[in-house]
Length: 159
Image (cartoon, rainbow, N blue to C red):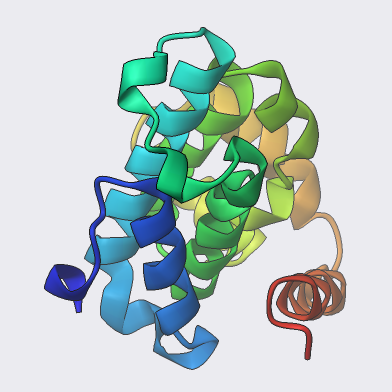
């Protein structure tokens, strides 16, 4: 599927995200990682005025048409449930730009489950992130995370 879309453009990445059914996200893990990295860089460029007028293709429409791509991709990555995606999500949330810091849901980082995610992070020397997410390990948060994911599905897919 990767060759079916122009992943160098926000419009192409949005089309690719639309083509990935939530139940198939795991099959497109590497593609989702590529899209996520491109969307984070896109948001960084927009925030820091590094995307010049010559770089913007008017056929793409407005940048607001692609504002949600990064969140949509993060939700699909959460469905994959690989804790190794958490560091790039953490970077997106806390080191790129203000809107991502405010709007990026922590729940995206917990697709593998809170305990498994925190254990993986600790095992890979990422104490700061693990400590921040550790409160999600208190009690059974599965129902809360499931409700969040259903809400994301409705938001992005309308069902």
